[in-house]
Length: 344
Image 1 (cartoon, rainbow, N blue to C red):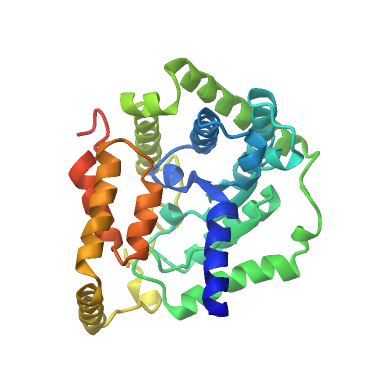
Image 2 (image 1 turned 90 degrees about the vertical axis):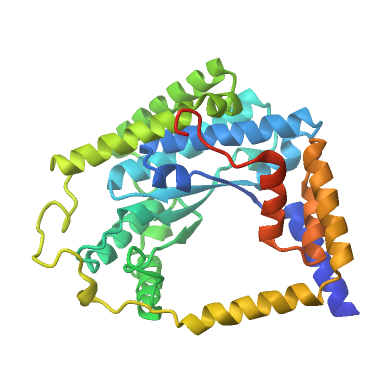
């Protein structure tokens, strides 16, 4: 009974107090520039805050729980500047735009992940160097937590050996380089300060434009951020094709073997794993209270149809054994499948 009470308390505590993450990672992975990632992610944060305020919450009651999730690419100083600009930009917005009084509300907590899109199938061992450089940029920029990709993730799920190299990369940075021993170690560098100002200015221009459009939701409906990201991705690929943007092992310093699969071991998943997971899923569904499951799904569907907050009925459904796929089926039935305006 005590164990159950502790689990219930921890679950409730997590729902109330865990950080709320606002992700820019997939914006960048889709092809945005660093400034676009910064601007669109911060504006998503603005949209979160505005909605909470609309529902009667005080900004200082939830802003300290907000955190941001950034992508980290190989342009070393640009990435460092992006983190620095993000902290300054968010602090100013929360203070001046929303009137926050709690100093914790002004803090931008950051998680970062090295750029999956930068990994290459060609000469995959090169990805170890890419990840190390990107991870160091994130640390120098001031991230609070970090995910380092494995060298083989562009080819398959990572092997245990590749995962260990990614882990050791972080540990070497933390334990051997000394870069984590001081706050903002590149502050005062003329170039870094210039880059920080420049990327913040570009992000502010985007934010002002989004304000003029009526906010992020309206901009998404009009297809603006999608178009900006798509154009940036296309421009990058054109530079690679024209060898204006060098990708080592892809369009320069290439080997005869186009895809370096033979250079490293590749993880192969036994097909029996899939069969076992299917069996377990069917067994799980058969053991559920099917009537209660359907009741919860109906409640979730009703909340969707009546435009109510879906979080409570969704949590109740999951607690009764409803699967993620079944939740998504309800959303697809009510809302349909989203397609970007102008790209459908």
